[in-house]
Length: 317
Image 1 (tube, rainbow, N blue to C red):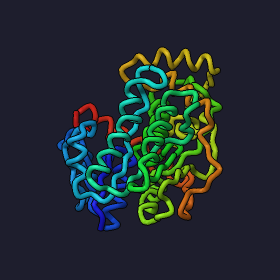
Image 2 (cartoon, one colour):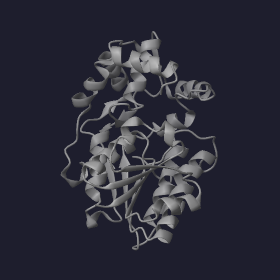
Image 3 (cartoon, rainbow, N blue to C red):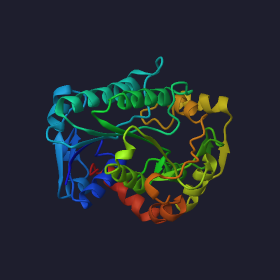
Image 4 (cartoon, rainbow, N blue to C red):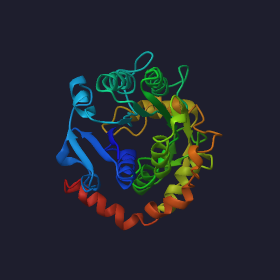
């Protein structure tokens, strides 16, 4: 039994990962900004300790990592104010936080670190998001031999409660037509359960120290295909009108100023890079296709989604 701290453990991937670690008899520490508002499925796990903490404070990281054998960092953001080479939110979350985590691991004697980045991360990538993700990887892999570090680069992650296929389904419930930015952008969605299994499998693999693994599903899709598939499963297919790159940037320039950001110009620039990989999933894990999972949470969407919306408006989320 290991004591594992999951930074970002209350998020989408984190909840699936925590459940798998608990099933494997590990103790899990999950920091959260508001323990009372944490997901119920996380609170109910028997060996999960939810701790109120500010993960951007060094003293808090020291407190969280005390007695831990392994630290896993899942934290990421999709939006930031613009900047060079990347905006302040990307700098804080994708670059500075990994550096702080590495230093806290050194201070507390943690000898194993797993960091989740993004497929396409590179210093010369066209988007601030991908450039900042690459800088975070460098900080983790530079930790040295005292800390066994492993980096994962997943493609877009799908599964129940995702913000990918579910978003496309919701959009088509409320709009008669979808004006889609970058419709030909390529994605190779990876199942959240496969991502969690890969992270858990690497913990016992000494050969994974210092390695970078790409995580992608078995099939490449154009973005238009995924939007149409989500709408069909949800029972509300809509016409999809693809926008050119310049119209995509114009649409994003308008939408990024709304309170609910659906897309930004930096997201459009990220989609210029094909989000695909030819590498199989590591550790012999078979890749789960979208078609094997998505019908289970989008196909029954009508009643379930109405129930979730009622809960939202009743302030029960």
